[in-house]
Image (cartoon, rainbow, N blue to C red; front, side, top):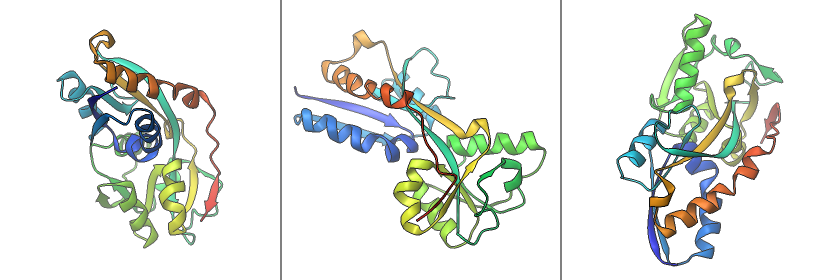
Length: 220
């Protein structure tokens, strides 16, 4: 099978799930070429709607509008911090308890940033933002030097935060649970190579249905 597939995905999908899934797919189909671009979840939906991309992956709290969507993966947002942070010994932390401390936040369009902003507004207390950064690696590095608390997916913490000797603490809030969805236009109009990739990624629904175990406090 030969062909070319254009994808857009949010940062979580690109860092957390897609590397292994795409490697496995390309090992089976060496003649297929992929073009993957990172966009915020809202722009993922727009990119697929407008025909810029064949497949998109976005946060499940994003309105898919008229696109077809499939569950892709689940994870949980955790707090990351230095081992000497006052919250580092806590097993589980309500979000309100973080508001007295400085935060390192992702860019304004990120799904995590939006959830954090809504939670802060619901608490009636301001969020102390020390700095905005463009990616999860930058969140971890800023937390490592003591700039504040960061919020990243747990599996991203395992890949990036643990090598930096950071601590991950669970956020005791329902919104900390996240899911990703695959979005496409009407499937019968997709090319054979796009349908093959969609079927491959769709097999991840079994993974998405499995429980995610998050250690309440993890030290690298």
